[in-house]
Image (cartoon, rainbow, N blue to C red):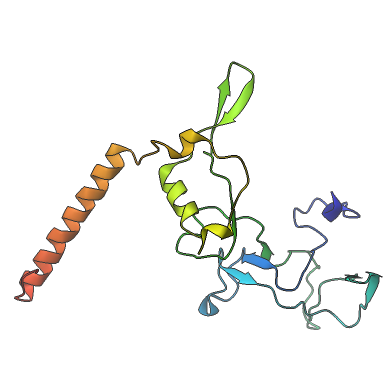
Length: 195
């Protein structure tokens, strides 16, 4: 694999980070919680600040490779060995439906399949039916229908008759009743009635 080329260490962090200005990244380490740079937060990478002691080598019109250790300062009294920990982010090429809940996008590529596979005729694995909640989240994240690209051909069973299970619908109705009762009780303490 290209990202492992020349990296014979057993460290799972890649020795090479491919950067493109404007690329989507997801933070994978709680860096600055007050600034909302927390595990799972999504951002656009704008720039890389390089160590000037290690200039880059242009390999093509649009690609420069930089060699050298991570930039950083070590105090004279610090006696720690240098270890590679990797960047506190990773390229965000794909996100789960759970990760994108509440977000809206201009363009999305969707895989409307279940997460499990079923063996058919004892030989080939077929993805299970798409979960109805996942289906809703995926289809409702894009601003327009024109912005949706489907990775695989749509199967009838993933859309037609794909309903939320009865027990989940019943549980949701129960939660709504409990919420209404809690609100009624809280308002009665204030001397108000729910309209």
